[in-house]
Image (tube, rainbow, N blue to C red):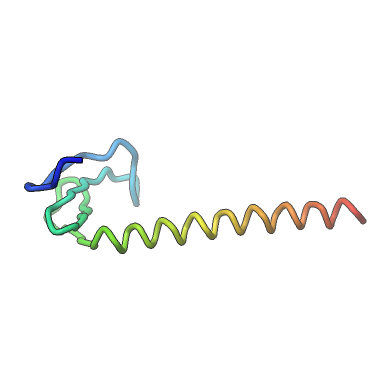
Length: 78
C-alpha cells in the first residue's frame, strides 16, 4: 500500500442527502471529510470511527436478516 501524504478528493457518483452530490476527502492523519458540492463546510471524522460505524451497521443488518428468517419460520408453522 502507498502511504497517504496529501489529501485525496473525489466527487461521489450517487446522490446523498436531499439528492445532492457530495465530495469525499481522505486526508493524512487518518481523517475522512464529507461536504456537499458547492459548499465550504466539511464534516470530518477519524477513519477508525468510520470503520466502527461500518462494522456496527453490518452487524445490525445481519441480525435483522436472522430475525426476519426466524419470524418467517414461526409464521409458517402456524
